[in-house]
Image 1 (cartoon, rainbow, N blue to C red):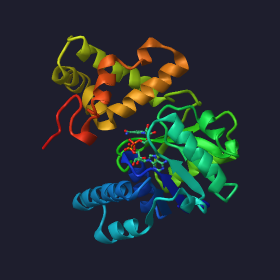
Image 2: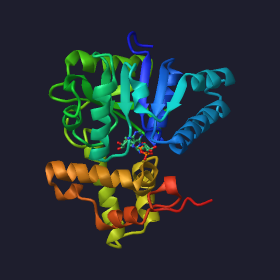
Image 3: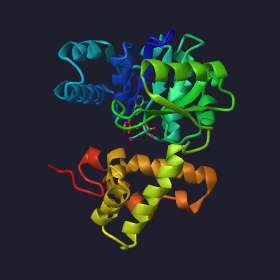
Image 4: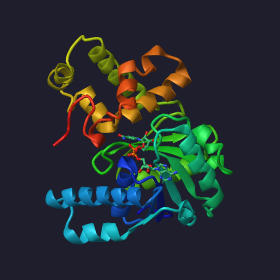
Length: 288
Ligand code: NAD
């Protein structure tokens, strides 16, 4: 464990928050995860248990390590329980208002004035979130990738006022304790990876929308022709179409580039609740 950060808080026990909690606990940290109610907390715990079970089945983790990891994670529904944390990672949905509310609360409740307040946002400028707190110099972006236990990359995004020591401490924790590869990006909507990835996915959706090619053929083109492990539409389904739309909205609002604007088909699917794998249907059908 990197010296200094032993108590980690995670806000949001969804796809990403559960993964961030899991890797932090596996690294030996004491982790508190907060979600809005018991149903969400139970779902988050279930996500972590399933992921740990997969790791045991594949021989990457033994039963004792599984139990010890779970024992290090506490699930709560009151954000006030994160008051003693040294690092808090916010992983609620990609909506600016929801994230601002979380940062406003974190600024009030986290006692340690050296604590790092991080957002896992995919696209919302860190500066906006930092200004909701009383300590903008301690706020930065830590953008993990899905699934967190498998993906090695974390983008680290200091805002223009983040202390360099704060960014260095966060980098040391991610690299040394979590054994992940850190890349640094300036605080621009989309950072490095989504600035490249989102226009590519949106182009695939526009191709489908215009009748240019079928979903199967678009994905097969990129898998078989470019050796991508997944096609763009299957990957969008895995990430969640609501997340893709929200990220595209933030990037469009920042740059006003038409290539970042969500295509109507994406918006209609989100309105219809066809959000991808997490609800059983998106561009492809996942119903059992
Ligand atoms: P999700 O919808 O799976 O999970 C969000 C969770 O936050 C839910 O459990 C919800 O109940 C909880 N929540 C909402 N408001 C809350 C509050 N005030 N306090 C505590 N919990 C609250 O979303 P996700 O896919 O895990 O995405 C979370 C963040 O991670 C987003 O900012 C997203 O852009 C980013 N992200 C997502 C991916 C991905 O592939 N899904 C990848 C990288 C980053």
